[in-house]
Length: 316
Image 1 (cartoon, rainbow, N blue to C red):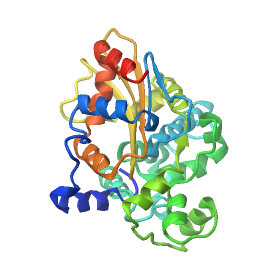
Image 2 (image 1 turned 60 degrees about the vertical axis):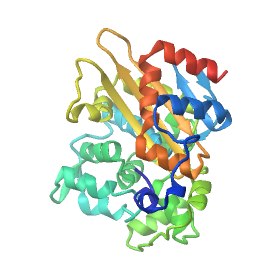
Image 3 (image 1 turned 120 degrees about the horizontal axis):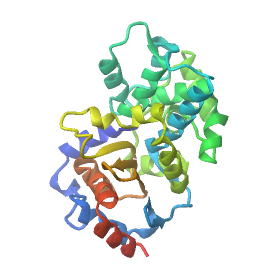
Image 4 (image 1 turned 135 degrees about the horizontal axis):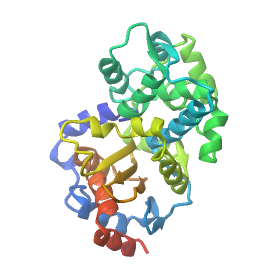
């Protein structure tokens, strides 16, 4: 989860019935997602086997951009520029955190890892992917250098928390300078704006071409360092790697949802799928965050050829 998501969902769940998505725009299953995509073609990007809808148009992808950070890390490990065992002070990691802006991801990562004074760089990367901790992503970006991420994404990849501080905490400097001041101890506290203002901001950050994201994902599906992190769902109760292996990184910001996922069935080649939704109405976005129907849609696109053909036809 990402900026302000926890507070927004709390408000939605406490809101009157009129704030809940209507039957016409509710994300409740794969079929409803398909209907939405067909009705909002300009605000949808889907890249899958045989489907390249808005694949080369820059799209906001929220935390799905973190697979670019992961790719830069995997490259640095392979080349010997960094070691997964490198120690990172937890106090430094905490300094990158902006409380109340990541849906509790940072706190959840600390709870899972139970660190002492330090964590390894690889544990930091796991927090970036598994809990989607923005502080971990920004610290890793500084460790590897922005140029390493730009080479992979084909476009500059900014700082998560620096953008939040500039947009909502009154910082008038560049996003990188805002974050640098925050890390140095000049702490700033964002003020929660309306959904509409957050959604307008979400359109401007973490933008990448979905086709590039899918190419990065396909490369990472072959990399042992990256797979260990992307396949974190396989460590959850009920996962059965003998039936289906899933590697994934999703993202959400108000009005924006994204997923970059690969699936592997025994004896079959991997299927790589990227979905990016933008300018989602508030009601629709809330329904998606409650149902996660877009994830079931992606799984069906990857594993059901007949459904994939229907999607391809709907987006022509």
